[in-house]
Length: 156
Image (tube, rainbow, N blue to C red):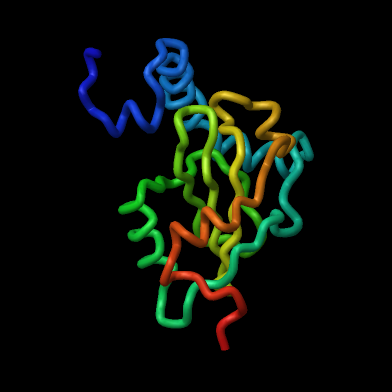
């Protein structure tokens, strides 16, 4: 293998097709997506979010901040989600790739609630991703990854 960067290989796969898809999204879609989203949602070209997505996980513990949580997520392999729609009250959106085809996606809200799901990536399955086909809760996976950060009930 020419690329010895294991993080790259784990995150994005090694097939030439996967690398080409990733390059296309990174150069052509990521830079313009925020503008397209901000135009498409008000004109109802794509649906905006009027409520939070499914799959609540819990709440950030009282002594934890969203900023510290984001730093922790980076350490365990999460990255900012470059093309996600925004739910009302959302302050953070990050994902952890599983190859190029799947991802764990987390959202944090102003009230400290954390929601997340496992899904197909938009880079590999754009239509399925857009229509949320195949999303799974995977709550136990998230709770295992986020030990010490999440309270199951709303903090007092």
